[in-house]
Image (cartoon, rainbow, N blue to C red; front, side, top):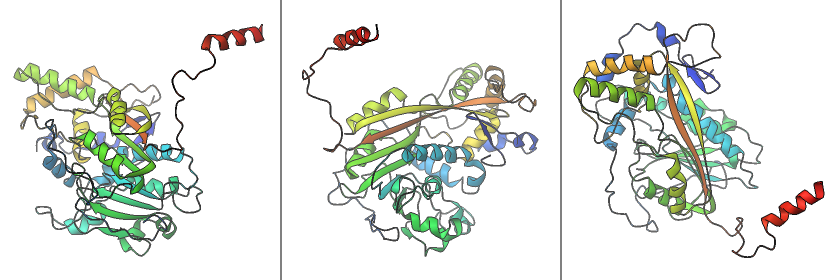
Amino acid sequence: MMSNNVHIQRQKIMIKSLLQQKRPLVSRLLSLSSSPSSSLAFSTSASASASSKSPESTTQAFDRPLKSIHRLNTIHHIPQYSYFKQEIASRLIDRLDDIIRDDGFPLALEIGSGGILTSSHDGLASASAASSEFQDDFLYKEIVQDDGYPMGGIGGIRKLVMMDSLHSSNNQNNDSNNNDQAMKYTKEEVERCSTYKLKADEEQPLPFPNDTFDLVLSSTSMHWVNDLPQLWKEIRRILKPDGCFLFAMIGGSTLSELSLSLNIAELEREGGVSSHVGPFVDFSDVGSLLSNAGFNLTTIDVDTIKLGYPNSMVLMEHLQRMGESNACLNRRRNVNVDTFLASACLYDKMYPLQDDDDDDGDDEGAIEATVQIIYGIGWVPHESQPKPKARGSATHKVGDVNIDHHSSTS
């Protein structure tokens, strides 16, 4: 049980408590590494050793300022609507825990760690009072667990730099003496892995020298980046030789049911279609993107997760309160209420929740939504990594091996 609203069973999340809510839903839709206590000091501008800024991408797909507003509007909803991101963070750290390395990854960077809101953001009341709550430290919650390393948490991480474009302009070095950190975690956990929070934009050159980090992590935060190839090249630059890039990102098959329902309703009611979901990176493209960025030994796998909701209006409300509303540049600025209602009816008919494990009847009338999560790992080239032998150096044919095998078993 991840929260009062969510029940996860065999990768199906069914939200039942919202069925009893009587408030309107449509109105919301319209609207450094050696010790844990060591401190870090990074410049918020690109270092002299950083690569020169590349020309602006000609394939802009997302409205980044609008996405920042979406995320800022989630400040009061993170505890209730963080169930999905917390689950993916847990699965990502499980993959990190499977990597066996003698000294672990002492210094790690998390890209897209979640913002820290301060009163400098105009138009949001009581922002400073709520700033301590606006911390999406889902990965850190998993990392600070004891992993058996002499020092550090999961993966041997002893210092985690948490970078996000919504952090306070005052960078923070958090250790066991930091009151905010001590309120959320035990002293042992904070001493196991300390953090440094840094404000920086993922779409700009990363403000770190070459060969800085042992590990770079990212969980469900890169699907709103316009120039993903350039970001991955920057990650390759700041990783040390034999450094690791481990990530989880939203895949191209996500929310296909919602997209199709909205498109059919829009075509029927208004005579045309527009972008409502994505676009997200396709699974088949991720491997080539990693290779083009300069990573070796790449591994890609996919999770397809089914989520259950009472209806599509609740689904869209949850997306809004997760900060995942549509931010495409070519989106429609206004969608008619009739189109939303028609799409909700289509969704109910076309995609009812398929949950054979729940026989209590509470799921009647519910719908399902598919989310594709792409997990990837890439390594910076190093002489210690396994390499293929030279072409033509084989001394046996595959057919010969098969013949020997059959002859020995007859």
